[in-house]
Image 1 (spheres, rainbow, N blue to C red):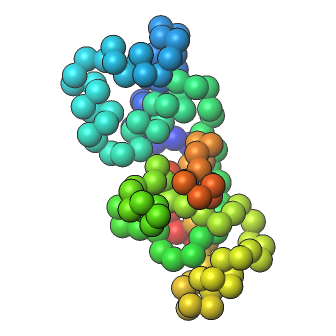
Image 2: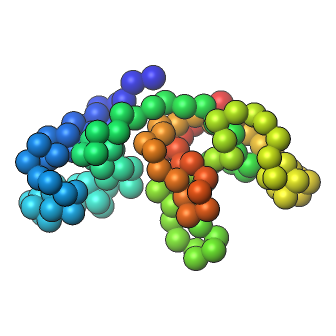
Length: 136
């Protein structure tokens, strides 16, 4: 799988800004308002691809497993503080037995296979996060 034009644009832009600025906060602070709005107010994953480019994290298209459908918003909610995560949480990249098979599986929540971009992020509970996911 290759990055689409939107993802590639922000990834390359992050790499470009990394050559000019030492810190990502500095890069964001030096952006003109239009670009900043485009990155932060557009598709939520724009900033994630920018950040990946800035830190030199190559996006990886990965297959994974999760309980429950992909949220319609394209990202999970951290139920501890009711805030959005930076992607869709997964239980792992392999279909192996986990504690979630007991806590969620016995509740009748389906385990599904998905794929998405892994940018190295994890949710508040340590679960890996995928971005721009699809159900397989």
